[in-house]
Length: 420
Image 1 (tube, one colour):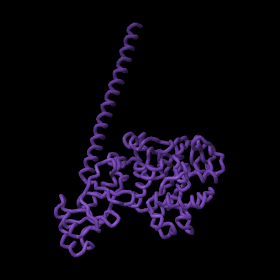
Image 2 (cartoon, one colour; image 1 turned 180 degrees about the horizontal axis):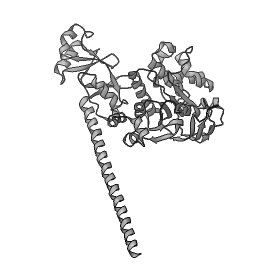
Image 3 (cartoon, helix red, strand yellow; image 1 turned 120 degrees about the horizontal axis):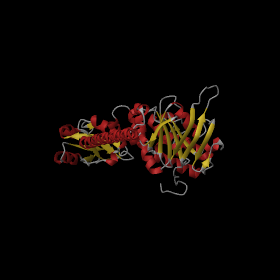
């Protein structure tokens, strides 16, 4: 849809928590204790920590679903601590686990909820609903009138995100939004969020207990101790390579070098072309392409240009009878926003050692193969090895300097003693 003044998106606004504290009645100690945190406009900050550390409480105080006991909340240049909480929530997007959609409302009615509360015109609401469905990769014509029970878990979460973004808020709060779906759907939803952020530049505060998810999504990560005390607040790469202490190291866990595969996207590496054919092509044309191509197989695309089957030369006899009986269905694909870890997992499950890369609508873009991925893994491991050598070198220099200073101190003391 052409962009109009009504559908222009708003960039993110900064969030500042100043000495934010929550003490529940009857509790001897605060659930959240004196938290100071700044989320820059347009970035994704992840709150991660053990169960019960107060990360969700901290998040819910931003939109005042939980009222702080003390401290201030600033969004942009405005102190919202004493603002009408209902009005505040209408200016902040909120997405939770299991989508939180109203079951008696259609998809369109769920997405339109806040815009209608804000008094938007019917035309503006209608256009916004269609825009939001398209934005999260759902066909407006197909999903507009469905009810939540008629959607898969992943589709429900997409609608939940669309509803949170419908009124074009500068700030989006997400409380473990992908925690209730299967791992494959979760990966795709994470990719979708990353893609959306490239387009919208919202300020997102995201709670998760999954450190791998934090690495994949976050611009910065706040690792929280008990009562939401901040153990480390830094970029994913800095936390992986230089955890502040043993507590943070426990969250990083083993295999930090492999976890760094979550920092690199498929779009950052070489996506190569691969022979393709369409189901709409004449059979003889498909056979000729398969016989004369540089590979022993080709990728068959469906009517919408999406990866459908891998066809091998050995499948030719079956294909002559029917394409339906020939080839192997594409088991998995990755998007350009998928991480190298996602791609590696997909490649390892494919006998040929590659995975198809798709665009926003699932259309074929190219493939990533094992060779490309392994080259990147080796580069990461080599970078870690060189960094470890450099750290050892700096440590030796520091110890040598400390020894030199100590010796100089001893010499000076001996000189002074001699004079005495």
